[in-house]
Amino acid sequence: MERATKDFKGVLPALEEMAGNLGQKTKDLEAKRKEVDTLIESNDKLQNQTKSLNSQISNLKDGELKLRKLVIESLRDCRNDLVTAATDMNSSITVSFEH
Image (spheres, rainbow, N blue to C red):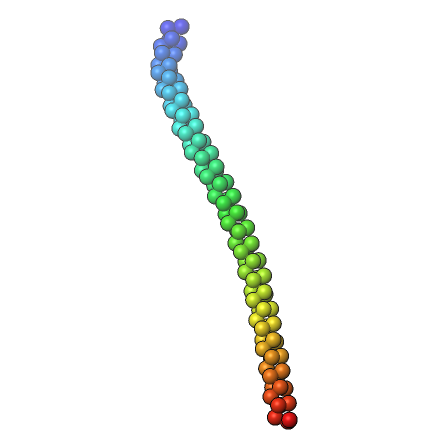
């Protein structure tokens, strides 16, 4: 019995040290978990911002394409009006010379 008591007293400090180490490891893991949670939250926010920016870029590209088509159509109409006006002026000049 005395030997068991001595053995137990010898093991007890080691167990206490292991318990202390386990407590510290638990605290360290909890701190790391909080850090990871913060990083995940930041990552989620950045992903949402990226999605929003990509949506805005897409909308701008669509707007640019519509505007480009409108400008081309307007320039085409102006060119056609100029050709019509020039043709009419040419006809008027020709008619004037024939009189």
